[in-house]
Image 1 (cartoon, helix red, strand yellow):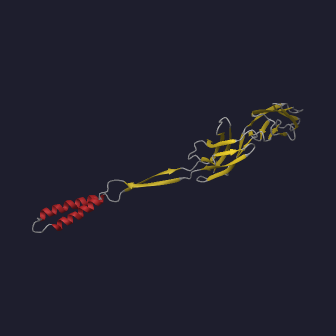
Image 2 (cartoon, one colour; image 1 turned 90 degrees about the vertical axis):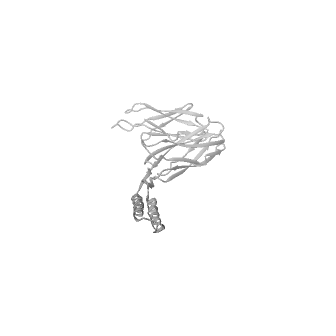
Image 3 (cartoon, one colour; image 1 turned 30 degrees about the vertical axis):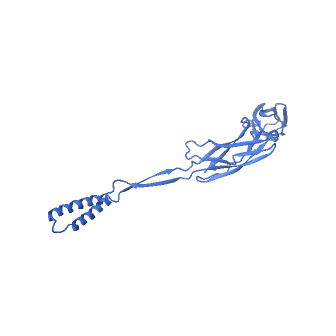
Length: 272
């Protein structure tokens, strides 16, 4: 026996539907009989149709706060009696939000959420969103935002906000730099200086052996410089794409004056 609520949270201005399904044992006929759904002063009974029954609870029937509902099956000639439970919270305000369409890494998705107030509430609500569930080992986790992040609602009125999810695409950044000391400029300059010295000294004052040694020294320096020319290395960093899978985000609305007045809604977003 399963008891499935249409919503987890409602205001006192909203009706509420509960579906009850009674399944027989394998090979046995579909259960027949009646199901009773009760909570506090509320109680209603329906006859099973193809093993199921649907209850609609009128707005304002349940009390403020958490309400436990119990479904009781009477049994028939083939199936024994059974029971099941569910719960619903009647809050000052509620959030209705559908998930955005599936998102590819690097893209964003959004959907519009509606905040609805009950008949006993009016005020300003601060809105936040957070990632509360992700695939195991996921990287480059998606982020979320709400616009606007503050809304004002009147009694039995509503306001809207845009919920946006952002993901990350894979990327690589290259960094280039010298691998070692480059002496080419120094060596090249040394060779030029040797030539200047050679031709700048009057022939009458230079001695060939001395100048030959001096020239040889500058040539060696130039060779060393040229040997260090042109060497470089490259390195880089990479950012992985947001891991594919289902991510759960929780959107919370809290009264700006009384933090005890709060409501939340969870939504699952798929990254492909």
